Image 1 (cartoon, rainbow, N blue to C red):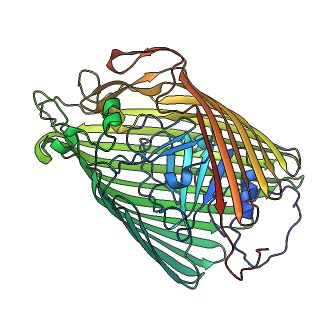
Image 2: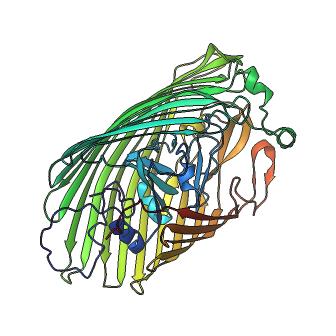
Image 3: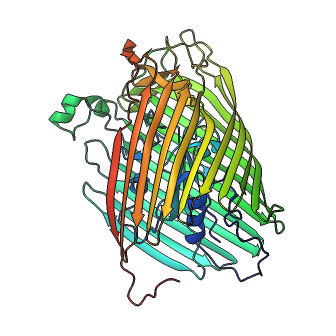
Length: 608
């Protein structure tokens, strides 16, 4: 059975799988296993009390080269995924206005790859390490239900690698484009249904549209699936990522943009701004059906990440952190989920899930003077640590043949610690730590007005801690900003889903109010210093429609987002930000209309 199940899931198990059909109260005879990819998942999405969407991926027939996650997320209501055209900065992914403050990497949105976090315990995430040519689907969860994923879960994006093809297969592909873009990919499937594997290797390179924007990377993704019996599934995942070069052309002023949008800032060449990244990760997932009602899932993973980045200044001052960042990180995590699916005395289904997760990260962060693109004298040397431990529980039940309820609770503790090892007269000991605790409740209700119409509402609370990078600097250059608080939000939404024979329509209205929003207060030499601001509001409307008419599949989406500061405050450079100002990076209106054409292969019969 295809195991991806993002909705109604607090920690990784398919908690809602057995609660989808209240009418089926009788015991059913045992049948042969049949792989169901779309219909059961579509039913769970339709019946869920959440705004949830899924994108199927086929690396061989995809109309885009599958270099960026933005290729697959574009057109998803409520989601903005921007390809910055800069491989040194990664994508910016925002869900309902969460994540827009990120100038590099992903913040405010939780990223999962095969159930393993690509978001670190402090909330900093990376999307580039997801291997898209071997992916099967991308799932996006928006709104209050996402809060059950813990820290920095303004939304959740999960990438799932496809299962190995029983009996074996092989494929290869090449994509070429302008400005030296090349993507080579080859995959091999082997084994059987009982024990099978998948290996996929790709290489990407580009000269870049702008000057000083070349990049190249090599990516390996492997998946091994063992089914020793009908009740057990063991999945091993290996991901190797090597990006030895990603030049950084930096940003342009408005005048520079109008004069020559392909130019680069002069300091980019002077300091040879660039980044090199390597990351290796191994994960194991065990799924065990204990009996007719109980199942458990155990997860463990670990990895290493090395990064060297040359910034656009020297950082030679004695109290500077340097103009070259050198980072050596190790991380690991474990999780356990117990799910029980049962029936009430009325015959209606009930599923409850309980679990625990622990994630740890330790990194050796050094800074050096940037001597015109060469590593110079040391300016920073510290050991940073971040970790979180979470407990969660969730209940999902049908109250009647037409009413369904879901409730969840997650208790989280996040701790960050800095051990300063570069101590001098001009650079005193900046060691310290900070701990945040938060409980995130969530409640949702669905009314199935008809077999084709579902109405739902839900409410929840969440939080987002500052990342180690956001805490790194403080006003007056007096060390890390340990006084920075976690942002806390309350979300609610109401929505409707309609499904016809060949069409589907989804509508949602959402409203979020945040306290302690993390925003910049100053920028010095390209480094941002952050503060907390109260009364930030994000509200809006999402509309999505799709249809299937033979080989043609039209789809359309529209998002209205009103994200603004409710109170005035003093921002970067001492500039007054008036109440009512929009959150930077948010678009009030976003719309897309697309038409897909996929003719059936010659001689293929209609699926039944």
